[in-house]
Image (cartoon, rainbow, N blue to C red; front, side, top):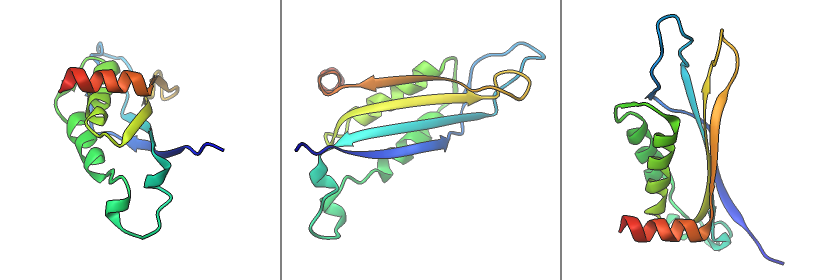
Length: 131
């Protein structure tokens, strides 16, 4: 039997500004991030309760907060790209899935978002490019 493991971050509200809207348009007031990071199960199935045995995701969450607040974004896609690049700097992350949603879309209703899955080979390739 093969084991898989992941760390899940769900519905993290980002302090960010995305998009350009005409006067009278509905302007989304929430940008919600979901991030699933696939890692080696050895980083979850630990024999001792020690931080050096696990993947410390706190620095990544802090970096995501900084990226989100790093000025105005025209598109959700650009912010997602920057978050994926930040994830690529962590060798513990083997693959990932990310989604970013904004709400409301129209008249206090609707959610609109994008989702991306980055497999291990794509992440490895990205690490080579970013190095």
